[in-house]
Image 1 (spheres, one colour):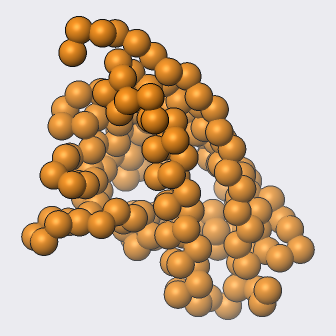
Image 2: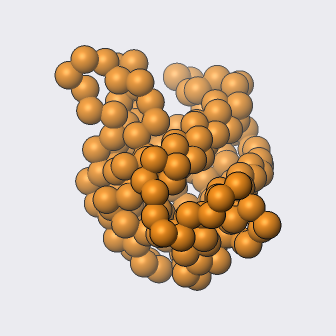
Length: 167
């Protein structure tokens, strides 16, 4: 590709989960939980949706995983900058498609109490590189993050705990 370009975008998504803040935060904090709800894409026969290669949930720690989608390997390399238990997570991440970096993002995930349980506010600033995902890259990222949060909804619903609240 000869054209070098960037698209900048910021989005915010909000979800309310009928569970205690500690439980919702914990879903982000362990490799077992992330494996349970992090695989959101349809896979082809014989492919594994998500492969977590590294998971070190602490300030300065890294998370690395690969997702295969429609024959393309997407690698996510993340670095945690700020973690306040049960309150917020701030991290940056790069996404590579078959080894080519396609984006760099900073995400902030905030956890607050609400009448129905826990409100999660996900704010992300992204830089999409060289038109590799096309002009729709920001829309695709919002869609992927929406899928991820929907998967978390199913995980919390289908993995009942004592701290789950009735809605």
